[in-house]
Length: 256
Image (cartoon, rainbow, N blue to C red; front, side, top):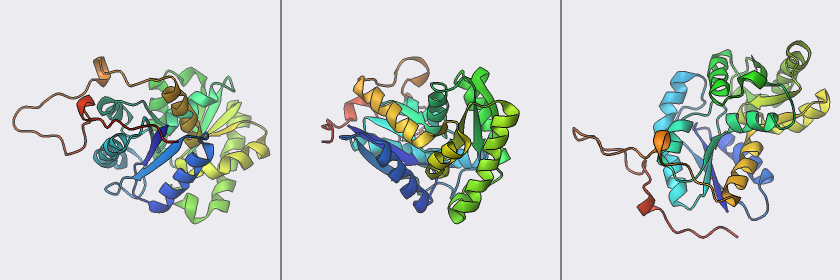
């Protein structure tokens, strides 16, 4: 099977880290197709960055589906453009934020999220509530580390994130912790060993959930809220490649 993972930002090194984490998590026979939104911001921190990233993200996802991807992962913990992506693609789509939170509910009664900046906290809280998981979420905490700082000084970042995990466990009653940024993927195993609780990162969680969806033959519903956009009046035309209609999908064979 083929699964795409799209970095909504334009930082190449982060795309490479995300792709590596996804390929390490993938089962034998799963091909990970990695894409980057070159038109997006260097990092996504808050509503403005997210809004600016969406057109390029949708274009990259449309290309991925035409390349034969059977399911898709949005590699931003804000789940940037997730609802729009589900509306224009046939294959199932998940963001790493939703994937990490849903995985946490399988192993703990209450989980916390440790993310980057405070500006992202309301976005993540809204996403968790929309997914129906708010009663199980003990807290969303910010480490106050900018996204790009995770790569600039990973040792210092690991220490700062670890401090917030300790607070989430001791003060908020978290039984599991979800790392709230794709750039934190490399920290999960060491932090879990240090704190003695499941520490979950969204990239590998999303890969396993999308593998399951493809195995079950699931597609995104095209009735109701995720119906394909129809023609617009007054001469509006969707950007080339953004809308994928069923009759234009490739007949791609699953990767060996």
